[in-house]
Length: 162
Image (tube, rainbow, N blue to C red; front, side, top):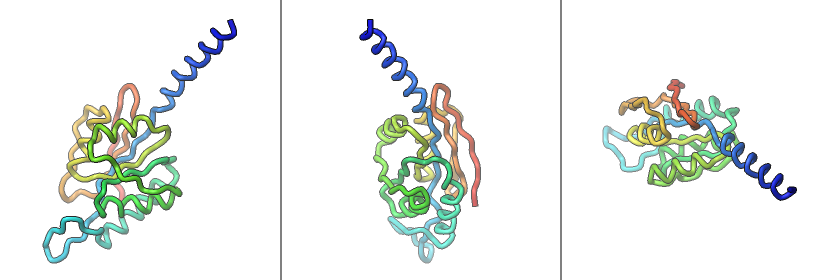
């Protein structure tokens, strides 16, 4: 009887932990990149405006309960994520290149997550998280802050930050 009670309690807790796995995923495109003289560099740093935007993002998200900060391997995403990581006492984790692998990690994370990507990867990630509303990010758009709620019926809110 005691074994059965313990087993039932364990099953209830397991079900409850999956409910707690519902989290908020903050998704942004990297901030403005620094390209010199109209030339496009393969892996540019952020511009002065981009660095200011990254600091602004950190100010917006410092109290958002973020437990993991992901960025692609490129300098511009790493530099966009760094102020948020610093403000929250975290390190920037390099995101897997495969969207499905990243989504699996994000969905398994207990707590809120920031993902810094690119104009082409942000919509792909939001869709892979289960949001059915199509999202686009223009080549000159750096101020979008997408807030994705995961769970049974994922949803997205699009905000803008300066």
